[in-house]
Amino acid sequence: MSVKRIGVLTSGGDAPGMNAAVRAVVRTAIFHGVECYGIRRGYNGLISGDIIKLDEKSVGHIINRGGTILYTARSKEFMTEDGQKKAVATCKFLGLDGIVVIGGDGTFRGANALSKHGINVIAIPATIDNDIGCTNYSIGFDTAANTAIECIDKLRDTMQSHERCSVVEVMGRNAGFLAMYVGLAVGATAVLVPEKPIDFEKDVIEKIRQARFNGFTHYMIVVAEGAGSAADIAAKIKQSIELDPRVTVLGHIQRGGCPNGRDRVNATKMGYLAVELLLQNKTNRVVCTHGGNFTDEDIDTALAMRRDIQNMEVEVLTAMTGI
Picture 1 (tube, rainbow, N blue to C red):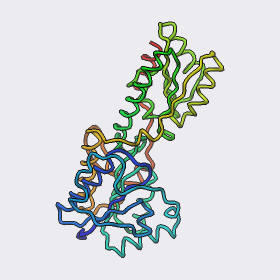
Picture 2 (picture 1 turned 180 degrees about the vertical axis):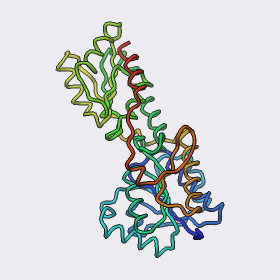
Picture 3 (picture 1 turned 135 degrees about the vertical axis):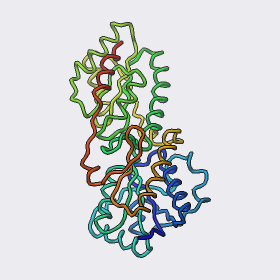
Picture 4 (picture 1 turned 90 degrees about the vertical axis):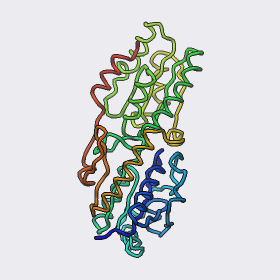
């Protein structure tokens, strides 16, 4: 089948680098003589026909911008069979030969549904959670991690001046990859992630005590949102050893800001490969990266894959904390 017209959308939580991926999709399509249309507001836009034509000018100077120029949303209607049929009807009415979807696992499930209705789809992983099992890197993770690190570094300056305990909650939903990475980077006293059972006395209180024995008077506890509320963790610390921790929830600030170099380059490579796959008449694939190599994986297989915190990260953290 000759590919003449494709669409691109962003869905789910935004991630720095999404715009770079959109730009790469559009410019690669145009390079091959293929028309490209932006589907705004994710699968909601595909249902309602909220679509605009994209060209070189419309994606100019967006590689450095955070967020997504196509906007994003989560669509409850698309989760239904009727909603999916409306989206498929839009694709057929507009003559789209394929769609590139950019987002996380929920976005991939949507792409999988479209594929089962006969629409060619390629998915690009973009989530600060970095929890897509088929790839070791997702667009947005590096920028989000650096944002959190910068915030915690600034927080440490003032907290250390007052000799306080800080409990900082980072994003990640049910995944602790962001929290673990950030915790290692900032030299946290303890890091709590949902993948590992928490022995509060051993994993938090004893680490604070050990840090105090080693002469430290400021303690940094990093908590993944899926491992519990930072406020609850702080209350338990206060109850156990009568410290009065200060709670900071970084929240959606981690999603914003200009994507860094790594996210821009990876997003560009992934956007390019996504279009190349469509031109090869491939469908229901996820663009992946392993050890610096870019490849693709079946979405069904990808959704069944799971990632876990690396044992080495846990071992390194154990050796580093409290010292």
